[in-house]
Length: 408
Image (cartoon, rainbow, N blue to C red):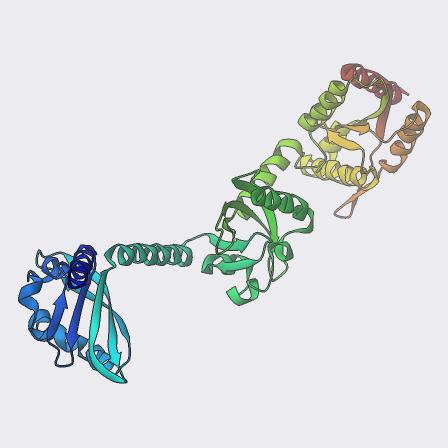
């Protein structure tokens, strides 16, 4: 039996020596009773040389004083656990987690076991994680554009200062809302579609332009970029970047207006008319479409008599009358100096277009009051009712009838 116990003890010692952590036993006088070989890796002292030495001789006075409250606690019968940074015999910095376990027999503490585990890798991972979180928070808070973290159902979890200033809400107010509460009603369906596509993996990221409603009621345009971050433990979240593009959209709309709208009359211009005609032609519809061709009679005499500034104001006033009377489905354009064309997409018959031409002669006729001066005006109107497959013929027939009207 003695041989068996000795063999068992040898096996136990070998097993403990091969563990990667320091394991030692200290009696109540704080003198070492047992230590495994890992102590040599940390402190450069062989286990057999450590036996009988006071723990302060191993740790050094400074480290001993740091550990003393825990030593006192374990000798009082309470298990202790704490983290400590050590510099080993080779100069390597090790982050350790130390556990002191009291050895209690018949309610008396006979000593304690010390278990010191190297957690440097874990500590470094935590440090890197904390650094990444800190950098993310710094980037969020100091970004010049709006940044946010949302749940997959659209609730705001985290918002930065720039987004709060953009939308006019405090972060607390935003966190009580969803993105739908702030999205322009016309843009909600597409925004919901994008969010569903992110959640089900159809899209990995989205980039779109949409409208938000500020707290003060103003509508703003934003460029919204978003991506889904999957996290099985904490839950998936959406990271969004939101940039104000209202000024750019206003500039684009101004350019679009300048490209298709006549500045003087606010009617469409020739480019707008040709775009509409080409669009109709591409549809290759045999269904006829109505057209009116309007020309101001002897407009040169108005310019000669009252001046070009008054002539321009007369054209602007005619344009306003046209806009006030044209139907939403129809398109009215100024194509020359005093010539305008109305594309009557709502017309139903040639007779109806002809009758409308007669009415237009009446409601566009003068006089027009320009700063207290009555300017006499009459117009000639031609019309056509032709298939859209030949836009040139539509214009030609309406133009010919206009000149017939002028001669009459």
